[in-house]
Image (spheres, helix red, strand yellow):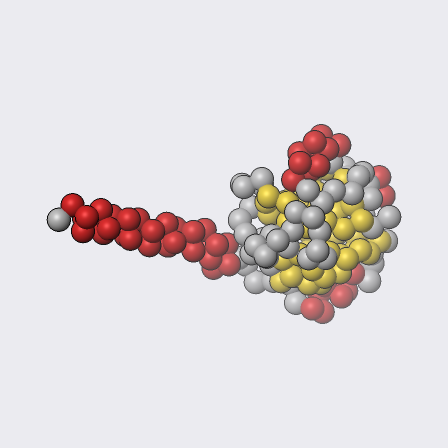
Length: 157
């Protein structure tokens, strides 16, 4: 009887953990607002001063934390024509140094400027605050604030 009870506790616990992990992964997808359409991104991208590419093959990117596509940076807006791995609490940063690891991000975070929140995973447009000058930086970074996870980065100058 004790083995059966122990087996039930273990199997039900594993199912509960799997459900919790699945919820963490799917909740941002279910609550994300509609992504900007391609025409809007193209219009905003046409005004860009810089462009760069998010790639999946960065050092701390993996199958759950990645981005790919073209990033366009203007003094007013930063856009992505592409995709990000879904996740919670994504923030867009500008950095004067290229980083591709969590440890580098944490070490250099004081030199970075947080531009804003990323709320969509297929294309995005984030307004650049007036007090941030993208030309003073050379790298755009997507960071998951809640879990301290590096998602992706691209050097634009």
